[in-house]
Image (cartoon, rainbow, N blue to C red):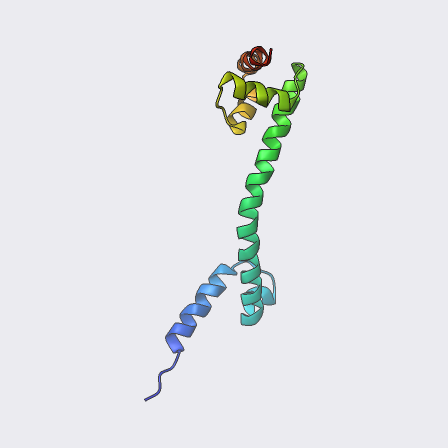
Length: 117
């Protein structure tokens, strides 16, 4: 007696079409096109999860740099001053402090400047 792929194939196809929900035209209806599109979409998703992290870090650095320059310090000097002062704040929290709490950021910049002197 030969075995067939009936149920397993249908389940596999259904899973694939579920991932392609909302795709336009043949990309969401035709098996081969759908398969190619989903593989490509997953590759982009994998790549861009890492790219998002890089983009956010760039944004935080730009914000910190702008806030530092208002206070007469360059970004690189500021970070060097923080390391010397032993202040271990990541760029995300520094960026949030620079936006939301100007007085707090002033105090951090003052400590960084003091460590540089």
